[in-house]
Length: 173
Image (cartoon, rainbow, N blue to C red; front, top):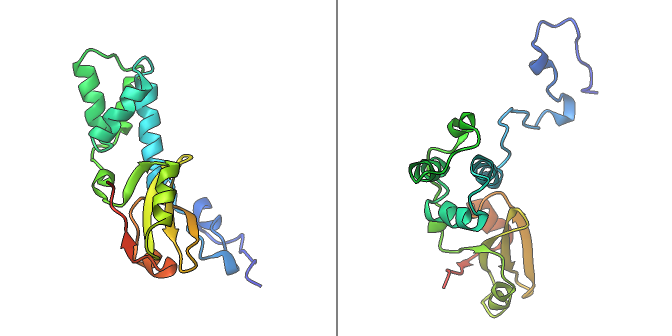
């Protein structure tokens, strides 16, 4: 029934631990970081642990200003005299920026006013936000109901537009 596994095969431990049968569609890659939001959280937490005495609110501002380019932030802080708690963590910092601040319909952290604005918008309107350590899509469906859908990234993919009938991104004001 798809559950049989030949113990005598000469495959590696990793290979033999892959799902078989009806579960073989599951991706078992060892990427470590599950999603883009996980990567952002991981990078921010690395910065916080590298510079525990640096004010967290100011670190958040730097993180957004530098478009999540954590290696640049660490370099700036070190240049200004801040001592990293563990220099071995610096190579784990992201070497490239993200474009999340360039997404016009990504509104940043959640605010209840955003939902009220969406309710007054045409059907098919949407925006994305950051809420409770994940990205969330807010959309107005054809019944004029507000949908709240956790997503992997603040960028809406084509299949999501089709699935949720998203036709009008609402730009930040």
